Structure formats: structure tokens, C-alpha cells
Length: 384
Ligand SMILES: [Fe+2]
Ligand SMILES: [Fe+2]
Image (cartoon, rainbow, N blue to C red; front, top):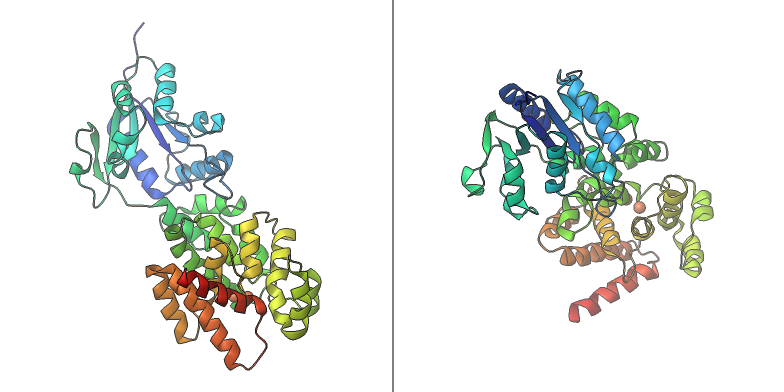
């Protein structure tokens, strides 16, 4: 029997979302290697890393749309494989290579990747074994030096490929923007399937004024920039920041009805002395009831964004700071706190609490006991 000697190419990745960088790489591999098949293998998305991991079926739908837009759909040599996603766990590349090796025992097998992945290749599990079973195909991305992966044999695809960082693309999507690296087809699928917080943004638009909506997006923009430095998942930071003022434009009577919290006694006092602050606790209730949020970190961040409280968690601290210091705030301290946050988040958080208290005191009004307790707790932390 004559063996088919056309190559088989495996293209693994999260494809979350599929972008023009992926397609350019696949198109070049198709042109230069004329494989019998190229398998796109979207990996399993772990719920531990992503708040709402985009399911395989949704990533596949975006991928199909992106392939169609690039004129690559309907070609028999293009397949989307559910091998990794179907195992419902993190799958190592050597396992994927072993799977396709079994499927195509005689064919030359290649694993396709961007050059940025090559630098870390030696740290992959069983990297030596992978090299015995498959060749590596890499597209060189701008700024990449071939010296970055010494001793890793690979074949470079001809051409240069756009740099496209999925995390930066996702950040734009969370804010409702249209990243240039994502095609219209994939964007349409993302909207249709309520991905990347599009459902949450649509719901929020129906609850708040346009100005409040912009402020919420700006709060999320800053939260997304600061989250990685604090070890917080970007999607969680974006969601909490987007929703923090979701109850702010409700009538006071609705806020009072919705507001619930562990500090019920304080809510009564708040309702009398500064009822508008109830929007924070009401917001947490609304986030749960209307938006279906169950993540306690997100609910805490919404509930405490206006007053703060001693012992608040990292996400709540982030949203508290971003609400005060986001782009578009009209007071000079916002920019100062924002700049400081990128250098020393704890110092910036203390400064945010200080700025809020100074404004409250200068307004000659009642200051919420939780804000004062937060101030005192931060002084203790500083001394300790
Ligand atoms: Fe607020
Ligand atoms: Fe706000």
C-alpha cells in the first residue's frame, strides 16, 4: 500500500478569540507545505484561570467564521479537532502529538506555533519526545530573535507574522471595543454568543445613564491594566469594575429595597444619613439577581466600592481605587493616584482612601463609619 507522504499539521492554541495572527500562520503553512490536513486544536479552558471560560463550541464557531472570512472554509484539508477540549482537562502537547501520530502513522507530522512559543519550548513536558515524533513549524513574529530558542530545531515559515497578544485582544473585547486583529465574522459570533462580557454590557446599558456607562467602562479599562500586576484574573476585574455602579441610577427607594449586606445595622444608618451610598450594596444584589453573578469576590467588590471596609479583598481594593482614579475623572488627584497605582498599589490604595475622606470632610457631611474604619486599618497596616 502506498503511504501518503503529504504532511499533517497540528495547530494548537486557545483560539480565545481566533485572530488574524492565527490565520496568517495557518495560511502560510497551507501555502508552503500543502498538507493533507491541518488540524486546529482549541485547548481546554480551565475554569480556575478564567471566570467564564469560553466553551469549545463557541471558540469553534468563531474559528469557523474567521476561516470563512479568510477564504479558508470549505477546504477539505482544514479541520477543527475537539481532541483536547473533549478531554475536559489541561492536555499536554505531547499527548496531542501522540494522538495525531496514531491517527496518521506514516505521515510527516508537524506542530505549528508562533515564534514566541519557541522560546519556552524546552520547558514543555516531554519536549525531547515531541521532537522525535513531530517537526516544529514556526512563523517569525516581529521582535523575535532566532537566538531565543537555542538548540530547538524548527522550520521557519516564509514571511513575517503580525504580533497579536490574545490577552490584550480579550481586554479590548471586555470593554466592548473591536480589536483590529479580530475579523468581523469572529466578532459577530462573539456578540451573538454573549461572549467577553457582551451580555453584561448590554444589560448594564439598560440600567444606567450613558455617562455612567462610560464611567463604568473607564473603571474597567484601568482595572484591566492593573489586574495582572495584582495576580487577578482580567475577566473578573473587568466584570466587577463594569458592574460597580449598576444600581447607581435607580431611584433611592429601589436602592433601599435592594440593599442587603452583612452589616445590616449600618445600612439603616446609611439610608438615613447618606442614602446614595446604598447603591453599592444594591448593586451587589442586582449583580446577583440580574446579571447572575455568584463570584463572592465580584459581589464584595461591588458592595464595598463606595465606602471601602477594613479587610476588603484584593479585587475589592482594585475596584475601589479604579472607581476613583479612572480616566475621565475631573479632579487632579485621580491622575496622581492612577500613576502611583502602577508603581505601588498599596500606597495608591491608601491615597485613594485619603482623597475620598478629604472630599467627604470638606463637604462637611456625615462620613461613613466603614470608610473611617478602613482609614484606621490602613494606618495599623502601615505601622505593622
Ligand atoms: Fe459608585
Ligand atoms: Fe463609580
